[in-house]
Length: 362
Image (cartoon, rainbow, N blue to C red):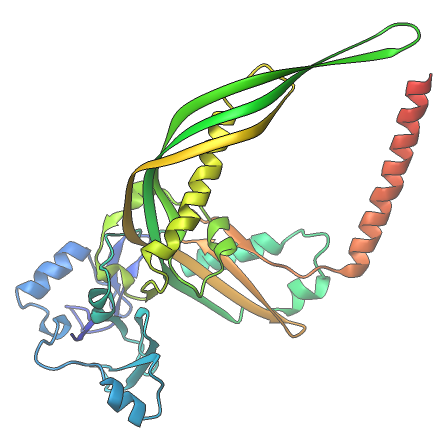
């Protein structure tokens, strides 16, 4: 299977998916065209240069790649625009030619494995991601001043991350211990009465499209921190949305991802049923039973802006949800400022505690 390149039908320039217009846009003449219209032009022969070449593969065989010194974990493609070699991981399905900047999709990556069912196109641009980063570090009291003034973004790229979307119905039954606390006082004493109750709750909690990222290269805590995505933005899979971005195929399959999804759904379902117990001072789950039915799974690609920077020899990674703009990342801490902050907090807490104790004694 060949590569797919997106060339402008007007000038032959490089086209990429434009988030603001949700269309393919030429980087040179600003021609815009919808994804559907572009495919129609290709099928009618009006953009032959962008059509797949079925006669000859643009990917070097594993033996050829190894002869050139590339490992078996890499695919090597020949750019149809400039003839340059594009080296990509086996799971990478879209990138840019490092020589001519042409946007290339490696169609065989998504046809050899399970083909994605959906994709959420990028809604936010690189410039918006940069601004979010600036807003994120602005005003952080424990952030070293030199970090914001000296550091710069080493790399920023838009990446489509593979996700498994799980559906299920969770039937939950809980045995809980609940309490009711009553307090009163007279001139001499304060009284507390605690009553204990056995509470039983049972219910069904349905889940739809619970995401679990299917990439071992992405930390789970990072991908879960930029959730949620709005599944109303799901589109039928089309690799034209990848033009100008990086897209990765999964390397963690559905079955290996299922336990994480089940854990997330179980925790949420138990909390949902537990929260239905009202009118008590406290509720503690003593025993629980959760049964899973009506399971289903779809495969989708979600947009993420990844930013990285290096400071004082440390790498710092940031991520922004490419649909909603939610931004997360790790930041360095000024140890001197942190010590002063917590020392001051301790003093204030001690004073407050002493005042409250004095008030209650009176």
